Length: 74
Image (tube, rainbow, N blue to C red):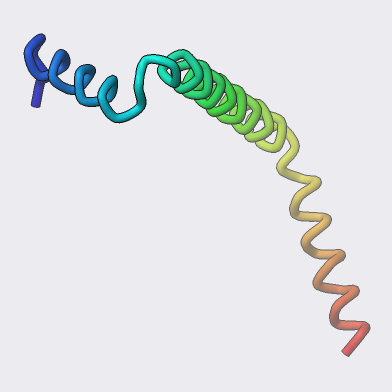
């Protein structure tokens, strides 16, 4: 489904009527910040996933020690 020039123009006119010309710069700024934060969060998650993938042995040792400590509590 592709939007043509006419459809985009209609959407922009409706947005202008709903929010008004004074709110549009604020709305664009907030949208830009949201997109930047989303990209930063996904990049951080990717970097964190790569660092965990490099150290798989530590995760198994930690899981085994957690199971052992919980068994002692019971």
